[in-house]
Amino acid sequence: ASQAVSLEKAGNYVFKNDGDALLLGEKAAELAFNSGKKNSAILFAEYNDTTIDSKNSFINKFEALGGKINAVEAIGKDSIDFKTQLSKIKAVNPDILFMSLLTGNNVIALKQIKELDLNALIISNGSVEAQEVIDGAKESAEKVVFVTLQGFPSNNFVEKITSKFGHGPKRWSVEAYDGLHIIASALSKISAKIERNSLQDELSKIRSYAGESGRIEFDAEGNAIRPVFIKQ
Image (tube, rainbow, N blue to C red; front, side):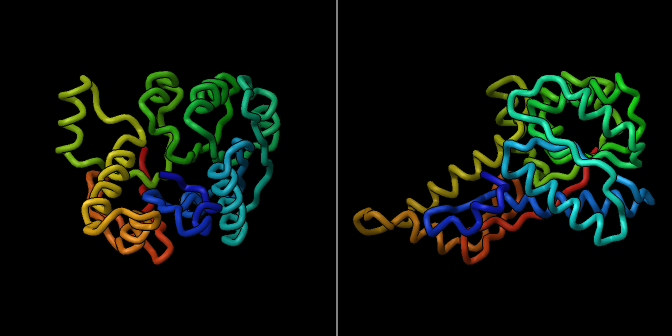
């Protein structure tokens, strides 16, 4: 599972069961603009293709709609303090702060946003959905709106995971589960001797799959087509 756009044309041996990061940025921009907010700032992780893709698509869509980007601030891979970037963002007084970060960045970012009293509507990518972010950020995560390609795992999957591990599914677990079963399903259809291209040949025939994460459609290049969900 990956949302990076660069993988969509990476060759015949790449098969994605997660959607497109560009859609996340576009949906976030539409959500921001339609809320009546016209000025935005961005905080993004500069070391990840997915977060960069989402950041770029947010900028393109928000500006196309008539919005203005007042600040774009990046954080590095080993950054543990974002106050410099957030102080610059606060100085331009944005109506919206779009966060395109990874799971590990969010607790720090949300806590420091609250500490700095940065008063903006926070819209994030789906990385804030992880339970460790909810537990770590606590009240700092309240009222954060986020866009995600992760829908709602089936009740059957939630019950199985909870029964076995004592807690609900963690982020990406349902995509990993579906991915494994997609591979297993393709392998089961190979009737002759398994050759070098056998698995790729069977995967390329799949156009849809009904899994525990919902129904997934695939294009001719093996890229998943998933809807974008808005959650809070």
